[in-house]
Length: 294
Image 1: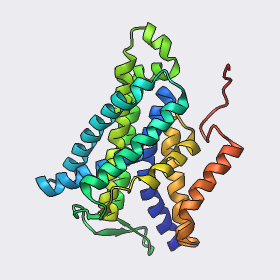
Image 2: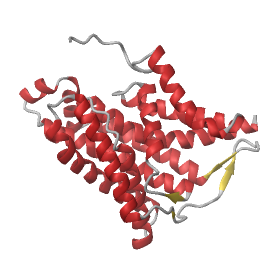
Image 3: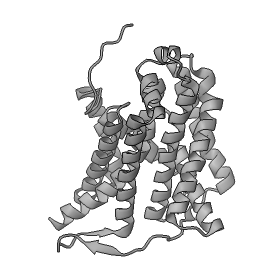
């Protein structure tokens, strides 16, 4: 029981990171039906922004988190304007290939500027931990911070989407882009804002990963980015609560595989889940079957 509880705690911490990255995937897909495979690299850039903010400015966790989110939001808008906006009326395969190209560009630009060697992330959160209900399971302050920050950002995102003018515009564009344009909504600005919000969440995840694992590299976004995509598909791509739930489920499953099986299989399990969900329920846990005229 102690091992199970400990793996649940570990899984929720890992799932929180997947959830934040998956939210960016699902928001962009919901608006323009694009799988932004460069999203994992934005998460990597966010980790480096946080690293340099802490080491150069000597600031704490939360100011670094905010700086990273702002920096990644700007980067997300720049990528959208330069790489994706010119292809908005092109075929989906053209946009997909471009997304992969942007991903590779960011990876090796990171290698060029940051070098391939891992950088040790400064310890800015306490290494202390708390006992859970008198068991042998513990939750560290780092894990607790990651989980609480994720919940707060998820609630903030829900507020933005459902209770603000920007969120209303996002929902309108996602439902019918042409009709939204006819109703006076600036779809270009709405799409850019969607990229900004999703990228900001990925930046937050990057800082929290740096704090949690104490090391960052220019290629750190590849596997978490793919797993976050799996989480988004699992929950229902294009559905915000689905991305959050999918990330948590994937984190819990990986933790259980590592705790009770073999950690070498944790990556394979994620993609096995993707295959299973595409066969059994392609729309994901929260998705619904929709008719599409072709």
